[in-house]
Image 1 (cartoon, rainbow, N blue to C red):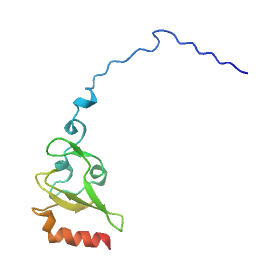
Image 2: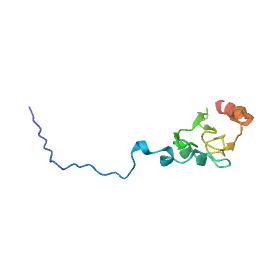
Image 3: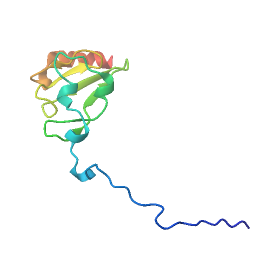
Image 4: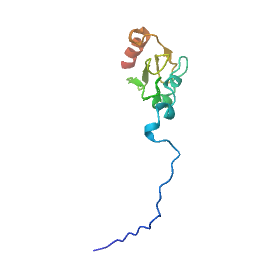
Length: 116
């Protein structure tokens, strides 16, 4: 039988003061970039930024929705809760504003092409 001894020295481990606010006081705005900045009409969608969380118009952390296409691309659909300029686009392509995502014929065409 082998016995192992462990001695703790009182005061050797003391708590470290934190300068960060408690997690329950943080908002999405404190932690993430605005979804509207990542998905901006006329701007190319950066794949590294697009797949991370961002904050919506109310400052809440969100993860944008996308469709994974059969060729590996992502087709993003950004609604009015995420940006004042809702729209859609493929990663690496220009984000296109759309006033009516539900009835946008170009988005519908992109979705069909995405699944082929």
